[in-house]
Length: 169
Figure 1 (cartoon, rainbow, N blue to C red):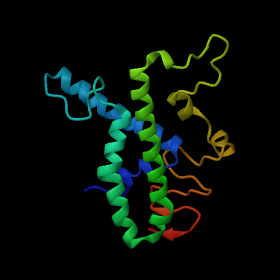
Figure 2 (spheres, rainbow, N blue to C red; figure 1 turned 120 degrees about the vertical axis):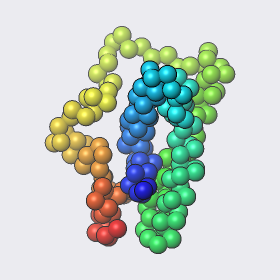
Figure 3 (cartoon, one colour; figure 1 turned 180 degrees about the vertical axis):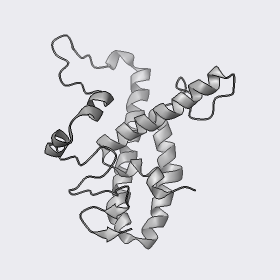
Figure 4 (cartoon, helix red, strand yellow; figure 1 turned 120 degrees about the horizontal axis):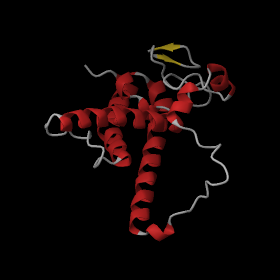
């Protein structure tokens, strides 16, 4: 059974949508690695060498997430006002990233250069993101990476409550 929460990553703010897309794809790639090690055909979207994260998210949002949330918005208008714009914004972001990647592939000489010899303090790995204390996350306005945020673009919590509105879902 598919639950709306299972496909809600694109409905989160961009920084969370990206992190969760990468995590989900890594899980799928591990499955593909295992399939390959067993001599099996690698399942679609599970080949880390041929799957494009941008294109995978565009397809996922166009054919699964957006249609499901549009249907849900017919019964819960708040979804149409709050969630659908977030999904549309994230879809635009993935399309832009895909276009940027294609343009860079066609014109590699146009790639920006970054000097990391001076400092790497601004680099944050997923491990570092996971290990940050709850207090640090709260100071930065995050409730938790997997859950919800408060503010102008509330999202659905795993419990199904729309933050900031008290509407039971």
